[in-house]
Length: 228
Length: 359
Ligand SMILES: Nc1ncnc2c1ncn2[C@@H]1O[C@H](COP(=O)(O)OP(=O)(O)OP(=O)(O)O)[C@@H](O)[C@H]1O
Ligand SMILES: [Mg+2]
Image 1: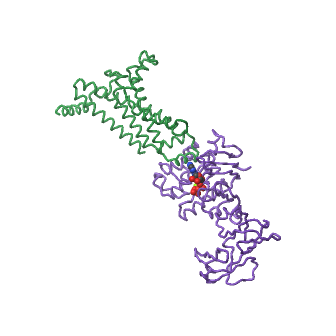
Image 2: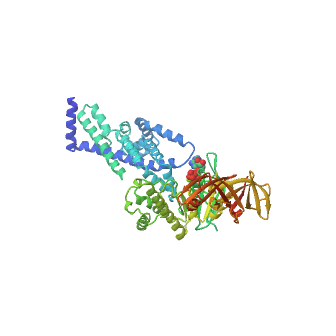
Image 3: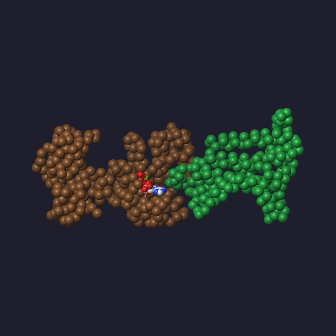
């Protein structure tokens, strides 16, 4: 119990003193996860609209499949990315194994299903008459998709928050394709896991608090955005 | 050439036939009112014209262009029309943004948009609400916004689905005035579905009657309201007295219709033996206390069954072998001391009877 308490105090110290190592790790985490969430959103917003607004055979099945992938274990994504990008893999030539770039790519794949699925359901929550209204006032398909996404902005932002949360909190993928290299691919989750195994609980707790604080700030920021 | 031409249009919803072989033409600047009982297919027809739906079969031409063919043409045509849906819904945006969206989608300049929106906000009397979220508007205000955002794009064709449903009489009058301005001044072609027949009569150049998915009659309001083509139309436009019978005799354009022993004279070309319905508008029946020597060919004495006052008019139901409904002014009802049980004479001219064939 005293260990936790002293860990807590030390954590506050580390944060207030803006400890360079801690800040570097937190910054890296934030950068990788924000980038992957942005990229995944850029892919998912149009893709979800395309799936939602078009009628095609197997649509229901596709959506069920996407929803099944919500529970894709991070290590499985890690495994696939590893196989594809390792030296001997088909994309080994890119030579991006154990780099932040590959961590971003991995996270994009990881959160793609949940982002896509949740945005599709967000669009499904918009009343049909609103879509008719957009078309009846001369919107092109693209313009209609934009206004309907705006209409669903609360649920869309919630989906993006979910995606970001999954990205910043995962550890399996980050270790497998990032390698937890100090000063290069070390992020909050991998650092916590390492420091804990070394018995450095104070540092772990400090990093854990920062992780939560980042999640909170991103949440608040996105919620602000959503009010507009 | 007509602006809109509809040929043999059919539409089904999950196997159920909703529109059957609709043929219709609309000239530029014309205002057509679609009337018909609920479920007749008015909204469906408007949705097809508005290109929100593709017909099961048949063709729609705009300026001679077949729009049932899909692709780019449809967007271009859609931008030349605007459609106010039956249930007005507003986007969860400000009133200003709601009204501006059609202009933005057409790529108009920011400054022009601002000017047009403020002008129209004034017209609909909602200038003070421009920055409010449109979801906070009352039903009638939202309806006005829905109309404003449609007419602001200055469409060639305006489709209105019951634009004054659920509004108070003053708002109805305002919106009717707006519609008539758009029609008269801007020469916009308008198709308007309405439940309110008198509204159709007031505003429309022509009236189309839809019953069970068929366009039963298209004509000016006099034709539709005084000379309904069949029994369904007659019932729907509220002819009041529809008496079934068989033509017993015909001479020089005047026929005698036998309805269960009672004989009515009317002007008609139908031959002897034809099963017909005689339609008499309640306001064409004259009531008096005793048989008068008038030019009216039909005159029946009977008992007053019921007198119902409606404003300055009295609706009188009489049993004289036939059951007749007459509409007289309250003043003459008072003068005649009409009361149920009293005897009264009902008369109407042979020319006041519209004869339609039964099938
Ligand atoms: N999307 C749909 N799916 C299935 N049936 C539909 C659909 N839309 C309309 N219908 C049916 O088509 C018929 C015609 O409907 P429509 O809305 O065109 O009638 P309407 O004349 O506009 O009626 P109202 O005066 O009540 O508005 C109705 O029987 C309705 O139930
Ligand atoms: Mg309708």
